[in-house]
Length: 248
Image: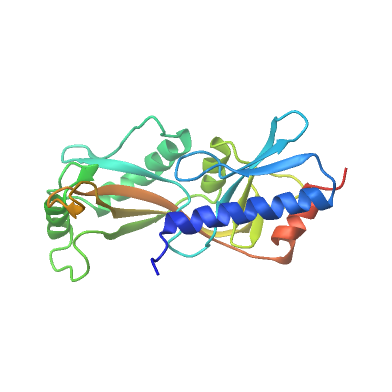
């Protein structure tokens, strides 16, 4: 049996959440429909629409795991030996990630400096050059790994998903509001929030006759936003559904 990828697990979770939402809407006779819309792209995971008008009334970000390796947004950086670490702008860049970078840049510059490849994308030889310069006696992987962890304010991840257009986030079997209201907020239930600077392995990009071509692997300087949050009875999935989506 082929092992599922993290993407496939996430898509399965989104489909399951949409199904459970629609069952709830039907039982409460609500004119609402949930659509799992995120997929592998950068859109919102679950869109909730009015069945009468087709208008979007809310949206939900889904995380099937709340583990320590779960990313809640990320961005790439590049290195300049004269000016240190720099934010890498893309069409999908968000104001909140630029704000995070400004806050963590002084610590990144102080803690991680040397004769590094510029990035943000790197080949395996370039990645090995980074590790040999930063951690010469490293015994772990020379392809990927965590570099440095820097604390950030507890509201950052809520702001990230608000800027994507979400109102709620589901993490495992808990659901939190992203802004203050009747449902407990993610910010208030966050115990730790941090930026994890790491070398990310994006895998092999090119093949010939289904055989990977050497030298086409891609890694990058990536900063992932991560958190640890509390799970309580008042954030249990169905508890929140019954509070937010009530009978018509």
